[in-house]
Image (cartoon, rainbow over all chains, first blue to last red; front, side):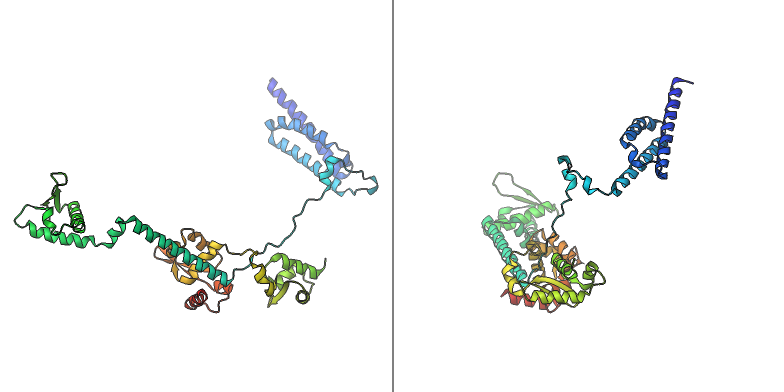
Length: 230
Length: 162
């Protein structure tokens, strides 16, 4: 037998001895042959704890049984404590440290936390406020648009770009007959800002669609429009 | 513990109508609940600003009508103001799409719609990529409208708006 095997055997024997002892204690207590009050639970538990550390490494079943016995003994003792009637004559004033045990737990007051229903007039009042708020918000948006001047997005939606593209397309087709290019200035009969923009933007759309090619040889000079696929 | 006092305590703490069955479950099957309630109703009629009212199977403890307006402002409402405002918009413009409500009330309206639907004050139905909203029978009962007809509800609201 090696030293290691010898240690394991001795531990098993010790555990088995303690376990049997507890077994006997429990069975005696169950039979009423011993009073659970006479068992020093702290002492027994300390012994158990010292062994549990060793027993856990050896056999889980042994340590779990030990724990079970300890809990049974503790339960018996607590039952006995609970059942014991306090003797009024022997009662001693509580120590200061024990005061918190003597006071009953605080119970919150039961108060009414009711919520009332909303009235129809309150609903109408909120509708008025919602309407006013929406009107103010719309007015702010309108004012912002006016102050901001040109709103590219809204113009893009409101103006019919395609209609203008078609108009310029027809004009270019007519002018390209017998010519390989047309000058931008030839398309503008009345050189107002609006007329220039309404002609120039359709040209950009057409150039993007590769129907025409735009060339500006000089900065701020006239734009040369060449036909590609009209 | 006195059975009559127990009924009184239950009505006080509930803050809502209790059925005779609910009261019986608190007081016990041996008590004559109808008699206890009748006694409380009579007692409260004689005193103070509180009354106990029985309507059919329901019994409620509430502030007497003559005192209600004076204390309403400090009583907490069961609908938060922003949610109530969204409900007002839905009631007036119904049937209305959820996206339109959000346009009027802002993006928080989606949460309000969810809460109002959970409270069963409105119903929603799929409508394209959004939902169509309208008020329910529970809404009609809550605000004491005499009709469930949407147009008539809108007419009544318009009348009150003037």
